[in-house]
Image (cartoon, rainbow, N blue to C red; front, side, top):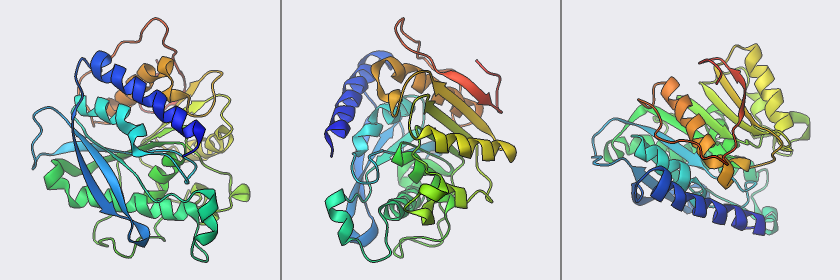
Length: 302
């Protein structure tokens, strides 16, 4: 894990404490750890956050968060803030690790394999695992939403949109379809610049996207590809919400002054698409910053 990743994770942990003890007026959601077997037989962790009094056999909607880290680092705990909050609102929320290959290990990948493709295949395994364990988790397998930050946003989308690459150990009968995407500073790459074009989203625009939330930083270096994708999806009349943080860069949503508006925006998107009921209990603080709505095909702009 790089120093920037460590600092980002530390900041998110501080925010998580504030959300749990303050914004959510709770000591935190009930949490349980699981594991799954990813590519090359490696075991990876999943943390599941549950609503109060949740029981197996239920049919709660499910949110799966994939952390960022340039497909080489990061940690599932980066999703704890969002997952804890969504559990307080009635969803079962999962955050998962996946195969990561630091730069010094990339040369050891099998010939023809890529770091991005392995991550995407692990993402598919996570979704299949959640659906396979739907009764134990108490979720409706037909109401799964994926989301993630940076590389995790890429994994969230490609695990569903790509149909070619799969872990051969996965149960083929279980699909990886989800009902919505929530993408925070997603790390997409324009096709001509991608060293891993086999899992590039611009090769999958013939498929229908579910409702998709984009949360973008105005000065983020990854924004150019996201803008190009949004333009293509808008041409296809996809169901889109696009929010921009003014004068901020990559992964800004995890900063203290942005976390409340991030959660409110996500909450309203999930309510609008039938995954949550009611209205968020969160209220912005005086110093909190607010994103600007750029596009909203599902509800009126704020």
